[in-house]
Each structure stands twice: as structure tokens, then as C-alpha cells.
Image (cartoon, rainbow, N blue to C red; front, side, top):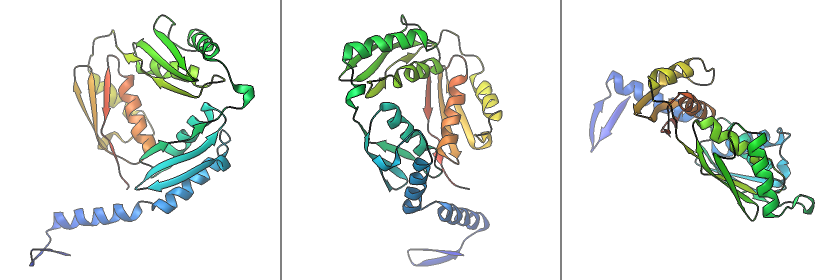
Length: 247
């Protein structure tokens, strides 16, 4: 193998040959956009939570765009989750519109009351910590939580309520615990996970902030690494710079 630069020929050294071979192998193993579109459609058809015939799928550069109409926000969210689980998907643009049947329509005050009850009875945060506001069926969550899983759980509680057309989660994570050996605890969580390869992930910490760098094999692995980072006590922010590659 050789390289040509400005008309000058020279053979590649051993390291350059290995890198070139790896790049060629990686590119060859990446699914084409056409193949990825088929895989996403198959995943949606096999997911009992969605009606795949109501959802359109297009792919460009491993970015999937979902279009169409569904009759609940839960179904819209499930379609996005199913799509992200497909190997080769780097990101999803979810343009699915929620069109509620008349039997599911509720007034904003009704949804707000239901959201308050859901936060109180069906989540790990209290109504004093998190407040919900509703406009035209879209719920916005504001407030504070000590841990990321509490923020996520509050969204889960309201996401499935009848009449909800969307959720914006603006809850701020503000830990009360002081950060202690954050990097070590994240590495421990990643090591125990079957979904993430800790050897290819670099962890940088600055106080309560964490930055993840390196390569992962799928979006699910990238998501799992971020989840592990949030699990460390004292973490207030996670920046996920992991790049999805193929091996």
C-alpha cells in the first residue's frame, strides 16, 4: 500500500498501513442508509408499542428522521426509543406529530392536575421539588432534583398521562452530596455493565462536571455510559462526546 501526495510517491510505514486498513474495515462494516432504513422499519414493526404503518422513516448519514402521526405521546416516545436501539443509528430527528383521538382530549387544567398527582404518587420526587405547567397539551417540568434518575423518573410519570402531547424536562440536577472519587465510581459502574466497553471510554472530571470521550459501538452503549456517569453521587453535569464507530 502506498500514498501519493503532490505527485510524490512513498510507501506507507507499518503504522500508517494499519490505520488505513482499520479505516477501510470500519467503513465497510457500516450499514448503508438504505440498509439502516430497512432495519429501523423492521424494529418498529416488531415493537408492540407502536403502529409502524403510521410512521415514516428516512435516513441520511446515519441520522434517522421519523415522520407521521400517532395517537399518543407514549407511542411517539416509544418509536424514538425503538429507533435508537438499532445498531448504526447515530441520532434521531423525531418529527412525529401527536394527534389525540377525541376520547383522549383533556383540558390543560385537567392535565396539570393529573401531572401533579403523578409526580406525587408515581415518581421519586416530591411536588415541592418539581412543578408542571401545561400549554395546549404540552407539559413543561421545572424544579430541582438531587440525582439525574429523579429528573428522568418525573418525566416518565407524566409522559404516559392521557391527553399529553409532549414533555419538556427543564428540571435542574443539583446534588447535595460533595463529589468524591467520581471518576473511579463511574469506571466501576461501566465495568459492571454488559452494554459498555470501559476500555474505549475516557472520563474527565472537573468538580461536579463529567466529560465522556472515546469510541462506542452503538447508541445504546453511548447511552449506557452516560447513565453510568450520572449514577455517581455528586455529579451535576455530563457532557457526552462519545463517538459511535464499528468494529
